[in-house]
Image 1 (cartoon, rainbow, N blue to C red):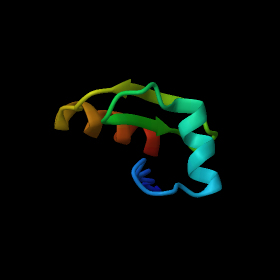
Image 2 (cartoon, rainbow, N blue to C red):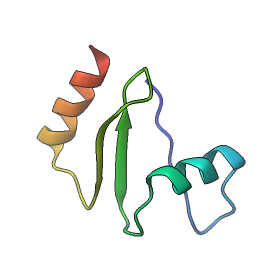
Image 3 (tube, one colour):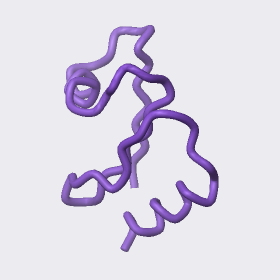
Length: 62
């Protein structure tokens, strides 16, 4: 499992710029969870409840 944090206030790397272009919708925070194949399991703006993100991460690890 990898976690990537993109700080829009600092110059993002080329890989981070690609993620911003593909997933960012203009709202902070924005959380995206991808499975091992790169498919989006969760892609939403706003805070995420602990139980929700825990369930999503469990699904991603299967």
